[in-house]
Image 1 (spheres, rainbow, N blue to C red):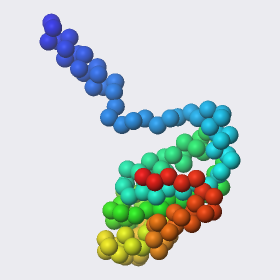
Image 2: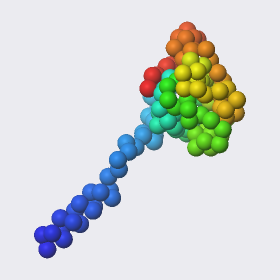
Image 3: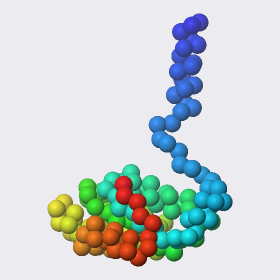
Image 4: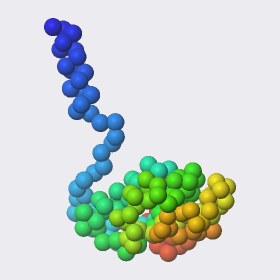
Length: 146
């Protein structure tokens, strides 16, 4: 009986907890008002997980009524190899085309052997991720680095 209870308790914990941290679904009015003061967002990232997360954050902001003037992801590092035609990330990005700008670091492309023609449509190439982020900051973007 004790073994059955332990097994049920472990099963309950396993099925009611998640290994992923769930994002905030509803933003309070003050947060939305604060975000409205600077409606341009820029992110630099290096992983597929963060690429998907930043796109999901776009959905969260829109769903909560945050008006977005510009939303740009600057990609560098190994994730650049995943931004190729017919990839999982191309399918994931499809609904954001025309809404979210993605700039890909040409230095990372060169180091990783990724050719411009292999990138999926809707991506821009920038000379360097660092200079692009400085440019976004100079233009008044809220910026985050992942």
